[in-house]
Structure formats: structure tokens, C-alpha cells
Length: 349
Ligand code: SF4
Ligand code: SF4
Image (cartoon, rainbow, N blue to C red; front, side, top):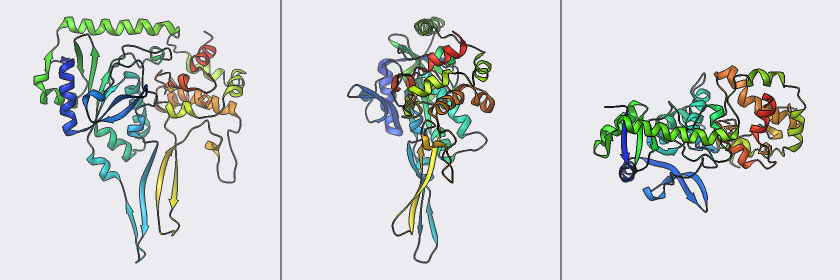
């Protein structure tokens, strides 16, 4: 089988209807004008042609905003019974369709955290159980800057299938054995792509790159060093004064992954649950430790922490920046803070 295939738009709907018989299918849907990743029950609910990305990233499908890690109960004979939801998570086979390249790269970055030195069984099970069908971005928004982070408008890895709209057809790139299996099981829906189709796909990507170049933020290898030199710069105070520490930039970021873990006991004190919940480094409580000490009391230090934790610290720890240029943090910021402005200032652009 060739690496490249074609799928007509009509056949994509048939493919999704087939998925629905076998899998839980997630994709972008529109409700009251807002696009979000949801479980669908019919092909027609999918909104694959929306500009940019849904406001909440797909990390919620792999790392839910709040999840019970286990429940515990002390039985009448004083044995402790623990129930782990992992078996139920394992049963769910899923397809995520319509994820953009920036968000697909965001998942590859999250893998470095949750399938790295320590392996998070809940996250890894959801990742292994989910087929990723990515769609090349065709219409970036005013907030997008994936050209700077090199995570779009198309990517080379992290997907099972990558679709690109080339008019009547989707150009399909196969990214994994699992992607190959999907095509082999649905051969009646696909046809081989020609060199001409490949050239049309590449031209589509170039057109989006051209649109993105208007944000005038070109990739730079100097960011890391310049951030190190800017650690005590006045600019952090400026943004610290503006930030209201709402945490929206953390929650909408596809690579922010901090969480809190706490136990909830029933009043009988004989049963309870352990819960994991997203946390945000912009919150005052984030660095509160036993004894009440808070290490990052000033908003300036929290704004600075987030920027360094996107473009500096993960380079040391994981070998890559942890920003995919999705622009969500710019879109949602209560204080109108634009991370691209900060980057331009640090880079002296
Ligand atoms: S820091 Fe902002 S632009 Fe970068 S990945 Fe997070 S939300 Fe997107
Ligand atoms: S969204 Fe804006 S105001 Fe809210 S915490 Fe982030 S930077 Fe601060």
C-alpha cells in the first residue's frame, strides 16, 4: 500500500458511521457558536471546517479536568476495599477525528510527561485506546502562530491518519500501522493518490503558511538564551501588574499539565475517593506548602514561571519547548496579554 491515499468527502461520512459502530468517536462539534471536542453519535454533528482550534484543547480527553483515581471503603470486617477505574478505561476504544496538527503535537508533548520517566496508567491507557485522525489546518485564526513553534499547519508525526482538504477529496497520509489497518479494513472507501494530488496537498499547506507568516513572528533558535538573559528584566513586572491570575491560560493550554490530588472522605469516615484535578501555576495556592509558605506570592513571578515553563525549562527536561502556537492563551486572556508580544520583546523583534 502507498503512504498516500485519497478519501472522498462522501466516503469520510461513511467511514465515521462505521467508526460509530465500533468506537466512541470524539470530534469538534458546534453548540451555540462554540466549537468543542465532544462525543458524537452521528456524522452530521462533526464540524471539521472551523477555523483554528476548539477553545478547550483535546488534553481533556486524555487528562480529564477532574477524575477519580480510585475509591476506597472500610468493610464491616475492617478490610480496605479499593476500586480502580482503570479496567473501565481500558474497555473504551476511541477515535478522535478532526484534531489539528498543533493539538496533535501537544499530545506528543504531553506523552513526554505522562509516558516518560514515570508512566501514568490512566493517561497511557487513554492514549493507546485512541486512534488519532488529524486534519491539516486550512484557516488559521488571528491568534495562531504555529509557524513559530514549528507545530503546524501540518506535521510529520503523532497521527494515525492525516487528512488534508484538497477540494473534492481529502488527501490521506498514513502515519502508523494503526492508520494502515484502518485503510485496509475500509479499502472500498479509499483510492491511491497520485503525484499530482501530493503536489496539491503541499500547495494547500504552503497557502496556510503564507497566511501564518503575517503574524511576523519568525522561528528563532535564540529564544532559550535570550530568556535566560531576561530573567530579571522589567518586562515581567509589567505583565505581572496586568495579569489577574485567573488561570484561563493554563486551563486552555494543550500542554499545561499540572494537577492537584486530594482525598474526599464521606462523613462516616469509612469510605472516600482520591481525586485528581487540573491546577494552574497562576493561582496563588499553587506553590502553597505545609506550614502555609507560598513560594510564588507575586503575580510577576507566576507570569514569569509560565513563560519559562513553556520555552525554557522543558527544553532542559524534555528537549523541546512546550508551546504549540495554538494561540488559545491569547484568545482567552482576561487582561489581554498576548504571549507573542512577550516573545517579541524577549527576542528584541
Ligand atoms: S502557551 Fe498559549 S499558544 Fe502556546 S500552546 Fe499554550 S495556549 Fe497555545
Ligand atoms: S489568562 Fe491572562 S490574566 Fe488570566 S492568568 Fe493567564 S495571563 Fe493572567
